[in-house]
Length: 358
Ligand SMILES: [Zn+2]
Ligand SMILES: [Zn+2]
Image (cartoon, rainbow, N blue to C red; front, side, top):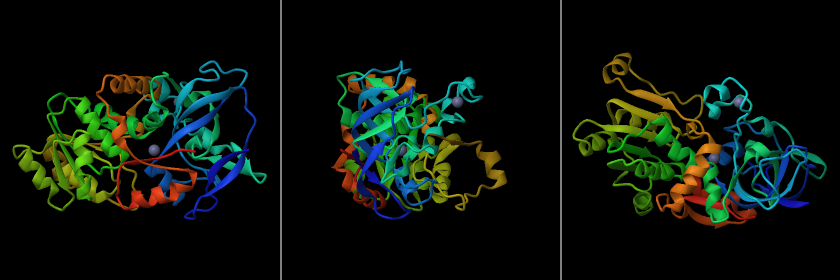
């Protein structure tokens, strides 16, 4: 039995309970969790915005140490340190074989199957990983081995926020050296996007958030300008970019109004990347003429349009070279009993990432 934060009902408080992990299948890996970041997608799963079978153990931005492996596992051995990958590509479907593994048709298969029991009842792992627990069981494809020199606490963030934020800038917006870029919404992903912009050599990095007190953290992550969210943000951004608008914008809020603002803040021919997960009834409107006239692109972004098996080692070398400040992103720590409080901080737009340490 291991302790886990268990969600039994949509919208209800999570409870720390003892769960029995299922026995290892031949391709499974058992991981002792070192840290798990509390991500906005966990909140969306807990509140029913994203679908989740219950009861569930959420948490998908995790790191830890392999403590047991199934008979056919070749990727890792006991004792290896790993980052969890919540969307492991199958490598055989149409998307995987056409170089878009982040759109894999089977990447969320593990989330559909029970990975443990609580009082004899099936428990489902949030996004297939179930990292808000002392231990979890995942398919071997869902772990990415990392070196012994990377602290496991900060490595956890590589599994979602950093991969997504940096990937949105480099892979989806295809930022070029010397360009200007706007990032709207400074949670874990937005702060990572600022860092991605700095890594990619952006000349001007404009951060926008509703909370004015995020400015110092935004600047530590690479922002060269900071704006408090307001209706006239696109106008303020044009002023900062010779009247043209930014080359690219990254929307990390998931609301039609901020998607519109991000789009309007870019220049003619600019690129807007939507990373935020919104609701299906929140509609953004675009005039038929403006779509032609401004020649802008609107780009959706899943998991940073990244192949985690390739990108995580790359991000680790950027951290080793001092070009990626993972430590800045994790502003709070909590235990398994503190995840609902972390959701509250997230709703209030406070701080960066909270790391749950089981
Ligand atoms: Zn996430
Ligand atoms: Zn696939």
